[in-house]
Length: 236
Image (cartoon, rainbow, N blue to C red):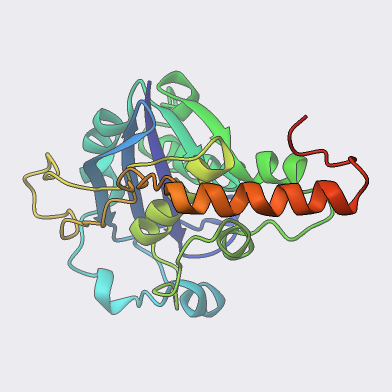
């Protein structure tokens, strides 16, 4: 099973008000293992970023001036995610923006993500698992013990990596959290390779009791049995 854990950053909250995507980040899972392949791209939105949005993700208008527009990366992005199950926190937000971007490219016959991918919304999943509790990504990190200490600001690739850890723990855990290998993009848009230490543990050492320890244990049981009037439960 191939999945892509995905996140986007935008110029504002509503694509219906003309807001655009400025960053896409995604990491690949195959059979619940991080493969090391990831997609990361900054995008020139051709409009100003709202001040409130800038406070969340820290991306400035100036930093995006030399980045490609969405149309220039649209095919590469679809190639990366096509056929995968997308894992997204608050999926309607990200999918709504992606569908809006493709509609802007071709209003007559726009491409929509549902034609290329299925979607799992981890926010909906978390609300069912933890009703009445905070279920944003930071709260889930704290609940599942995922380190998000580097998350002073939101960033699409970092959030996707964190969400991958949270999702694996929410859905049964994961023993190998090693991101290795190189991204298949050759356009220089990918972030530096991310490596994590393996969480796999060596086999536990089995220590058996010595003969002397077993003798002392039996003496203790005999004393307890005598004191309890023959009511010792252990031998039974």
